[in-house]
Length: 460
Image (cartoon, rainbow, N blue to C red; front, side, top):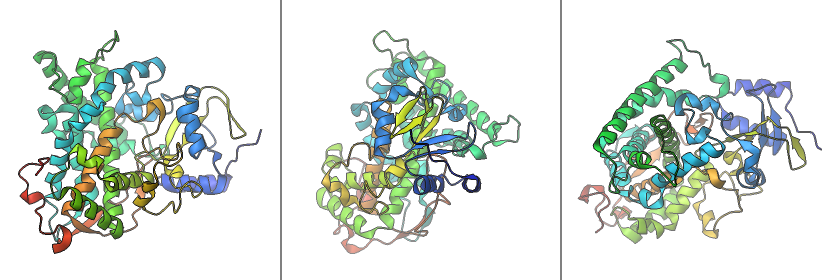
């Protein structure tokens, strides 16, 4: 067997210096050590990197039973809880996913279109010419309201900002790399503040659970996620406990609003720094549906919208890395990987490989006209039976945002080359400052935009 490449002492010193820059670390490992590498001296900071489509397929599809999740993601447990889907394994994961899955059926997600459109329109109506703003911060609040509205409906939708603010300290701490974390329970530490944030959010969630249980069983008309979780009782399975429901809700908020808001900010960046792509998108949208809000059928008839979203997710995937623990020895690409290894695969690196993608670092939505790429070369939401359960809602949010931006906004990006921050979810470092520009007469041929609609989602 070939010996796994390892960096020397000098490289490990560089890793320590760049501990807050996961993008740099991933690029360095791939560029200097190749597609298989071992980094670190001891657990929990020792990892085996398996990079590229073949590695993704091996881990996500061909041999998923070789790996476990719970220990690999134990650093997230302080926020999302021990029963969340992300940290569940085996039969526990199968049961919980089976009970949670109905809440994310295509039918239920499509019924969130009016919510998504309304919240995005409310935000973009504030983007008036001459205003400068941080698109990441503003869209983050919007995505948070969508996430909470989809989870809780009208009953807690109006408290979205409150719930988001409660969880914000924990979400920020979750974004730290392992080298930056100090899980010490002292009142002044970020870790303790995160635990306090989780407890406060749980109080709010528990109040709503108790209210709904007292009100009786949810009907099909109550299509928010919490109603579905409370009603979950599949084929003789034990229903979810209140603790399990709280863990799922927190996990869905963390994944659904934190990562999606980053992707949305990057979409604003990519369209704002690629005027030809934005012009093509604007032309297709206005020629097809004018300035009205899109229906689900409209979205299916706008291939450039789909292409713009996919290209954004290619360059800026919601999760830059995925982790697994090897439960047994296995062989990959001529290397023997020992049991107990923490294995890293990376959508971020895969999506930027020159032998997989033409001009991999360029934003080129037209590349998607040729159809889907080779298997497991595009994995923004993972793959296999553990694919991100919220991928359809995240995609819908990004599609609607792309349409409404093309219809109603012109802007310039103030920092064309922002860095990325975060251990897994790459958010724009320093935010996404933009300036809103006046609309041009040819933008919509005199057709009315947001201000002329009586209701988001209403067709002409």
